[in-house]
Amino acid sequence: MAQVRVLPSRATKPRNTAKKSSGEATVSQDATGLVIETFGRHVTVLTADGQQLICHPRGKKNLAVVGDRVQWSTTADQGTIEKVLPRDNLFFRQDEMRTKSFAANLDHILIFLGAEPEFSEMQLSRALIAAEATGINVTIALNKRDLTALHARSWARLQPYRDMGVDVVGLSLVTEPPTGIDELNERLRGRTTLVLGPSGAGKSTLINHLIPAVDLRTQEISRALNSGKHTTTNTTLYWLNPGSPDDGAVIDSPGFQEFGLHHIPPEKLATYMPDLATHLGHCKFHI
Figure (cartoon, rainbow, N blue to C red):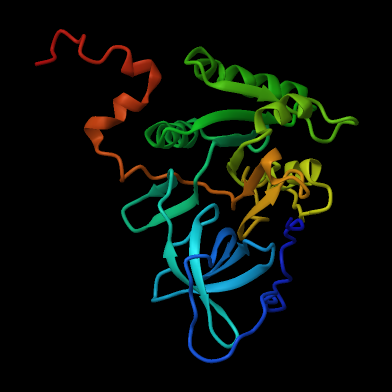
């Protein structure tokens, strides 16, 4: 099947591995594929025969996201997304100014946090609400267990989420062997998982452990600001076992510092909060 997707150098234009054709755009019902990477307005599509095709959207907006199944056409030297096929789900955030789509057709979301830099409970809660609204299962992974005191404090902060039934695992990716990686692998097996979290938590390090051939670049966190530096700039899908896609895939996404929920009506928010949802309709002031 397909090989592990390696990010192209930012100094070079990604190569289009599909065969060139001449003349007008051609499209057939069989010209379908899976979006495995987005960069700017362009996407990489994995075609049915295992080639990776660089495509651009038809029109000004790129509506395709990683995980989308799409129909594409080819012209002389490029591919064009003609249609995004129906989705099972779409995970996104929205603020006053814009909507940011992460990925589509997900089975699972891994919210990846670190004991350092300190994570925001508000942003974590917002991501959990968005996942609940979309109907996608979530696991929280708390990395940097080797930072004993910091990890213990962060683990205690996650107790309310564990009490609500959220799945939480602890990790250390710098110990030898890594701690908790087998437990995490059980949750990833056979699923398409979006790895989501703030910058500096160690998402790129995790991908390197799961799929050593990828070898993503990592950066130290900015301790002065207690925040991470964005290492990942594209959203990319990687097969956990390139020879067997059914074993599952992870989608690496850029870190974020804010998570807007403007797409969810305020009156619906409590229904997506497990600690509040059980009490809905029982307030004595409810009319």
